Image (tube, rainbow, N blue to C red; front, top):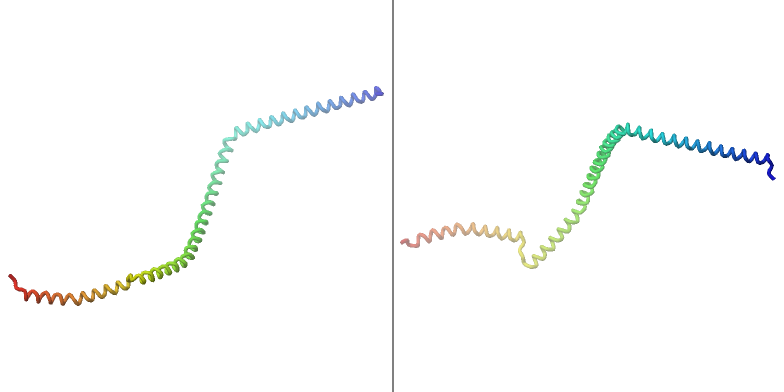
Length: 156
């Protein structure tokens, strides 16, 4: 059986628990109120100083953009120079085999033309030189023949 003394102790415990709960509830309400007020204060401050902060952020952004752009341009110039060097190296490496291939091609074409009887440029040059020598010999003789022919042909 529960005695009066035990019942009184239970009632005291319940009252103490209710009091503790009420105190905790009041503390939570007070903390929530303080948080709410701090948020309102921060919002008000942000509105007052927002323009200044925004201008500061824009200024820092411009500075950062300039630095970043300068660094990017520098890296681009380095990459361009590096690629030009690589291209030059590849071009010089490729020039040797292309020259060799060109020489082989020219030799084969020359042999094929020779087999077909097509004269080479040196053959044509020799032929032109020979014709020029013959023309020099023939011109004085042709003049002499014309002079003689004029003397022997009667005029009317």
